[in-house]
Image 1 (cartoon, helix red, strand yellow):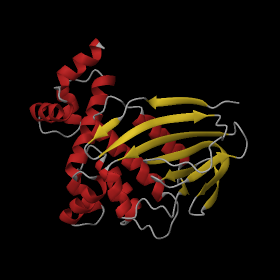
Image 2: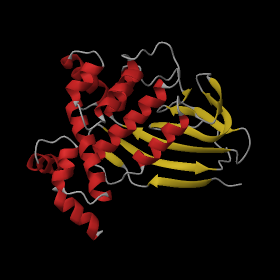
Image 3: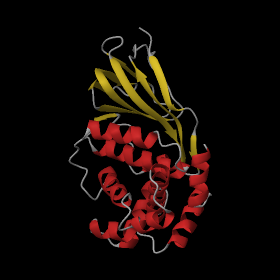
Length: 271
């Protein structure tokens, strides 16, 4: 049985912080990977059906099942496959760039931990499909969304060394707070019990962008979805998302997307 392969996105998602080189889905994998394979970039693979085996040239071996993830590192020989031909479905993202090298330098991406398990496989996969299929969002928003997914995967291993204020678990909580339209960066810092300057510095080290900018990108992304899916006027959307007035909302929206809300909606209607 041959693998059936679909790409969710066929183009690269590029930003100065990093790139999502390929995002896709494989159904009915035949498990014919040669031993060992080497990639020039990172890859996150999540098993959505079936079970199998992982091994790398460092001698690490793991049994895998639905809801587990594999993290492939550049130039590390690795090998993974289902236990039976056609018995494995997966989604994957290939990625690279300076922000992910920072993650590795800080131990968030660790070659000694190449596999793990999602804390909430169904919820994670639903968010993956939503975020990774959202091709209308700016590249930096997409990259930040993937970082949140990556952090949630790494933090879901149940490792007791990951406290709510450290490593990937802390970053996941920060991303979740900053993804809300209300509050913002200072509110997120307070809810995490941190001094704002410490929070700002720590978040930027992990995400490669300041928390207030991350929050603004997500609010604009939410506004774009509202323009696509509702008949609400710009003034109503501005009020709903907590902007002080429509003019400020329009200015921020255009800074991020390159179009005013009216131009954005007109372009979508024309398409």
